Amino acid sequence: MKITVIGCGRWGSLITWYLASRKGHDLTLYGRPSSVHMKRFLAEGRNDLLTLPGTVRLSTSLADCVTPDCETVIISVGAQGLRALMTELSAYPLEGKTLVLCMKGIEATTGKRLTQVAEEYLPDSAKVAVWVGPGHVQEFYAGIPNCMVIDSEDEEVKHRLVEAFSGDIIRFYYGTDLIGSEIGAAAKNVIGIAAGMLDGAGLTTLKGALMSRGTREIARLISAMGGSELSAYGLCHLGDYEATVFSRFSHNRAFGEAFIKGESFTELAEGYATVQALVLLGRTHGVDLPICGAVYRILYEGGDPKEELDSLFGRTLKTEFYL
Image 1 (cartoon, helix red, strand yellow):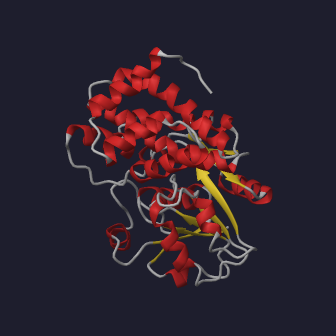
Image 2 (tube, helix red, strand yellow):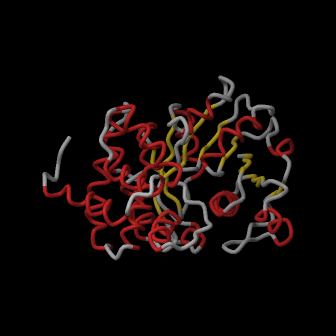
């Protein structure tokens, strides 16, 4: 399969390495000319985490990457930058192509799922899918396996991608609920920030309660949006908690901890923008999202972290399960 990966950060480069070296696909990796990651790949063929196989083509020109013979375009950029990227891509031949979105986010200003954003710019003959689930670059590159999900409204696309992408270190499952897959995957980053806040406040022991309550909270939202609440208990959300709520590699968890401690954090934490979208969606669909609300108030409204966290977990004095 001829594939272009757009985005040369840690996840885009891992996908390129995996599909080229483990699956033998024809890969082109695109990065902007100004990208420090692409400059290093062009100079050294590697970054701090991995070395790309020599068969991978590197490019800083979308025109060279999104060509008629390119079957699949995998996108791994910041979620909030997808609309601008799609505006650029719409100038190139996208007919018949499959776009695979590997970011876990929701458009902050509109609350739109990323597939909805992409579809605004795609011709009818193009298809879109998502690649979600747990795993970190450091672990995959070390040969440590994990399970992930491919989901799409198009059954043929979904099955073709799972067959083409499954390998020894990534086992793919077929997603059956695109709404749930997208919302669950994006929301786990917000739960990751909340987990980091607990770590920073010396309340790590409450992560069990956070996981239980967080999953139920997101399940209610998915259901209200027309998806299956069971998706929240699958790989896209609860199944990704170990990698997001506990792992030292999790940017969202690390960001939450740094925020509480008043320390700087320069890496991308998708949950920071996503929580805006979740609060918007909660209001739109009439769903109570206490954890998302607490994270939002702490990050955007100057809420006192101790008061917000105390108030949040004080709710357990009422009843554990509610609809």
